Amino acid sequence: MKLIFGLGNPGEKYDGTRHNIGFSILDILANKVSITFDQTKLYSSAIFTHNSEEICIIKPLTYMNLSGYAVRYFFEKYPELQTNDILIVYDDIHLPVGKIRFRGKGSDGGHNGIKHITEILSSAHYPRLRFGVDLPKADLIEHVLGPFHPEEQTILTPTIDASIEGVFHWIEHGLEKTMNVFNSKDFRPSPPENTTNE
Image 1 (spheres, one colour):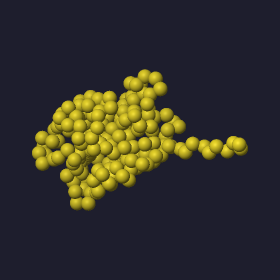
Image 2: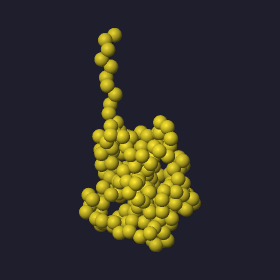
Image 3: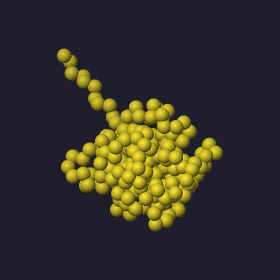
Image 4: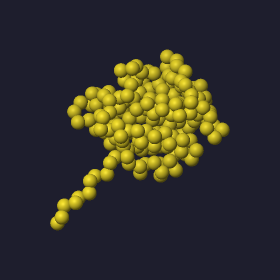
């Protein structure tokens, strides 16, 4: 069994924001495999089978800074789970829009959801998919709780598609191979060539 947690905040006012990209990716994934979420007070979840393996996708509903409680619930429910059986999908201001990074460990980078999960697991060694949302130009809270800019939309769609493709690759091939394939992808437009005659 594999568990994929997409991080975000519950409530319509957070839909489509940078901080909710984890929710957005799981919503699109669920639509692709034609499943719907069941909701409890702690989380929304849906289950499907891929290559004969059960996959559970989960959106914690405790607000971002308490995301670890849903993770703990599933580890208690399925005591056979190992940390390498989970994948955390979340927004990362330290990557530009158009870049994703699969990692097997690391610091929380100031992300409160990852901070809480690390505290709950007593370990920073667990697979995660970091989705670039860019550094704020002004206020951090306004940035992450705000929507993507219209000019970012053409980058956003292929980056989300690659993220979902990467999730399936992780399920099938594991973290190391997925890192090798997806961490080099870059969906930002290429800078214009210098055509100035010298």
